[in-house]
Length: 495
Image 1 (tube, helix red, strand yellow):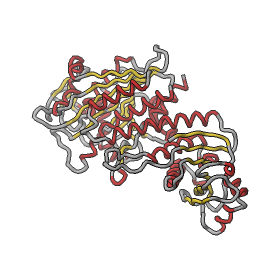
Image 2 (cartoon, helix red, strand yellow):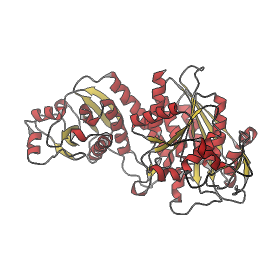
Image 3 (cartoon, one colour):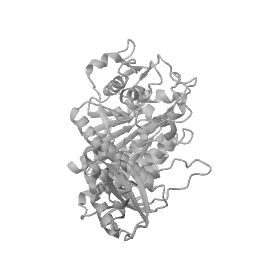
Image 4 (cartoon, rainbow, N blue to C red):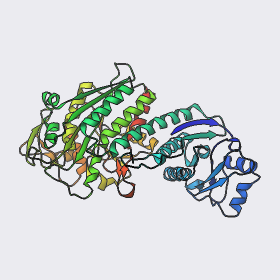
């Protein structure tokens, strides 16, 4: 999918389809009024006959209207102007691209951003790019007969006045983010027999070759043993697939600038280990590496944009499987930090690999560290599939991430990280245990990680409810690539 922006009038567009908005009650948007005048009031006549109500997210496709150069016109209902908000705007955009993809149009020119459909134009353009990319994404590459690729290839955002430079920037940023989301979704959707730790390492090396400002390093299990990563290595003991510790260093600024470190959980398949998960929906545990996938997507996005910022992506990746060599409940392991951990549940393995990766992050002398993980089912219970969980040891950092999430419409919600929860992790036999009980499971998981992040400012994103969808629409979402990329854009532009 390619995107561009230009000034133009809807009646003069040589496009396969021109898209304009109509408000509920038949009120025409500014672009619709120009089309209506050029077509000798064809739109007004349709509305008067009741063919288009303007109700939010409704669409009506018209062919070869008189006086116009475009082959088609798509009318999109904007609803009541007073009721437009972020959700309705996104719903309208999704309906728009659903309708476009039901035509044979190869390109389309959109004027819906000109009325901002309830928000500022830059925000609408970003969401339109995301909606367009989502509508044409396919996850059927492993089928013997993949579906035909989407016909729609090019989207032009047209404005009645000359588009501001900020709109061009917003478009470029959104396009790069969408490409990053596509990579994250593709990696997330791959099955565990293909997307192994070795496969992820190969993809990281390929990303480094594709972008000269990304340096990729892959540590093997023997390297991790020398570093004392006993917690990470304990998780992989039941698997025949070798674990990997992947590092991708993006250098976009002066070497003196401290980097932002992104740590992505990369469990390529999680059976729960000896604490075996129920069989139902266990196939979805291929998505337990979506934190890692989001780091891949974000690194690609910022490299495409050439952001003037230094970022390090760290991905601890392995499988969690049961075998005679697997860790058992009651085992005690020693982390890279020297702290010992009593393992009460082998299905709480994400924190065991992340804690060593977080300790390893300190070597880069980071300004900020953010880990991203499909960590707890408790987060799904608390926040559902709408918001990612956010916990941080600094409120300023939490606010920065929450703001980026709102800007990108990839929202998070902050939960407390109070010391009051820490005693729930106390162990009689080790420095800590790896679970804190059923109550407050998302918080106690973050409290566990907090014990390894005291030397820098740190935030934790629990994406267990937002990284993928189940049911009929099953598939990776590419979240939180938009949030992370927007956060890094904000950081780069504020320097």
